[in-house]
Length: 97
Image (cartoon, rainbow, N blue to C red; front, side, top):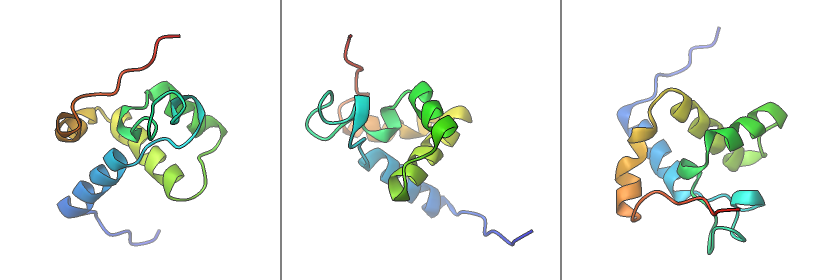
């Protein structure tokens, strides 16, 4: 088993800020339905993230951040995004179908 360093509080703050500042660039939560940038990853529903977990994450940083978002939400830590949501004016609302 590899020695994996334990993340610091600063690492966690950086991760949360990256997730909060990244928007879904395509798909049903992309800019077409959530102008102008798409839905922030922190506001994606867990069902949507579960769909990617089952079928495969996007390549690169987007996929890694989406995976971390799902882990945070499934661990009951969604409230960690509250300061970012407050600064942005609240949680993004999902459009009605």
